[in-house]
Structure formats: structure tokens, C-alpha cells
Length: 110
Image (cartoon, rainbow, N blue to C red; front, side, top):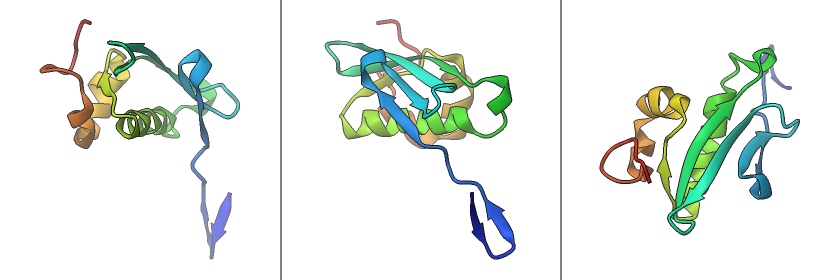
């Protein structure tokens, strides 16, 4: 934790790209976002996010999504939000990422 004057500011957790397992995860590997590559590696299908109960309420799911969407953007990938958290919660709260969503609808069935 970093301190600024009298207030304490929690540092954002470091998110690691685990390319071989198709995951973005916290350093302790307890919270993660899992994806599959589709369409010859041009589309990232986010299939699952998981945050253990001991780490819920810290915004980790959103931080994992931002890492995945930043990765997709920097690698010119489209995203399929198959995970219900991404589709129902993250994208409505962060509509700026909708430009990366694959196809005409937010949910696709490649």
C-alpha cells in the first residue's frame, strides 16, 4: 500500500497474462479471466471470470476485464463477451469498450 499524507491508497493488483493457459490472472493466480481464441486467432472469446469470495468487492473482475480488453485492443483483436459478467455488468458500465465487440450483436455464436 502506498500512503499519501493521512490517506492510504491501495495499489491496483498486478495482472499477469498467462498466454499458455489463455488467462489473465492475479499474481497469486486466485482471480482470473479465461478466454479462447477463435476465427484464426483474430477474436478473443472471454468465457469466464472468477474471483474468490475472499477477494470479492475489490473490483478485481473489472480490472481483469480491462487487462483483457487492453490486450485485445493492442493486438487488433475483436472480443466476444460470452462470460455473463462481461456481457451483463462490465460492458454496460464501460461502454467505451463496445467498439471491440465482435460482430453486430454483443453476444455471438462463432
